[in-house]
Length: 243
Image (cartoon, rainbow, N blue to C red; front, side, top):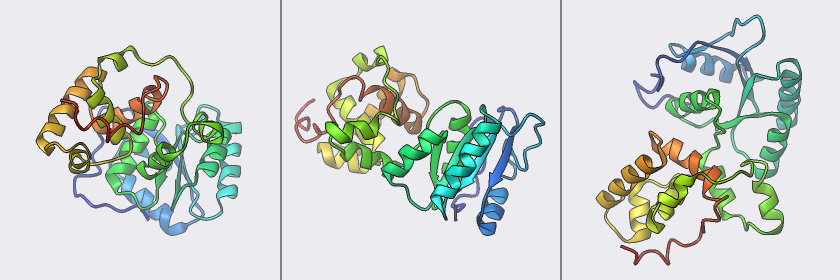
């Protein structure tokens, strides 16, 4: 079950966000009770009271994933504008592809802490597609040729890369790719054989150059832009010597 590891973790990043009518579709009674408790005090109203349908549905896929997708399709048929977040114990790429086709917007692990859950919901309502870092790492490990490329396309729609890509140095590009994989500064510093303090400076520069506020938003931006720009994923070792 999603856990609260921080006393302040439930505070929404955007406290001025409008109230979000939220519906829980859970076969697991304990998970439903836990989600209701975790969303208490946030902008996500459970149960949602909007007459036109919920703004957001959180779907429990910790049991039968196919049954969860049936609920997703039914919900999207009734309320096409409703955003949908699926929660499961783990995600496989083929299952995620099916979920995206069914209308799922974002994915969150049932083992995530409260802060991750809230941020996932907030960014989903802002139009972002959120994936667990473990799933992003699976995607990055895929060969982009043949079947591997086909697995990435449904999750990141093809588009013209953001011009901000050109502002990034080769080293900043590699660091940003590491952020996509969820690597902390310490791990990135070890990969590039530089200090953690230097990584922090690079991260701040990256956030400024691409116009985002935090690492999560940077990773999402990179998912939709670095791949489309043809940025190499496997260059970390080769770029260690760059200044």
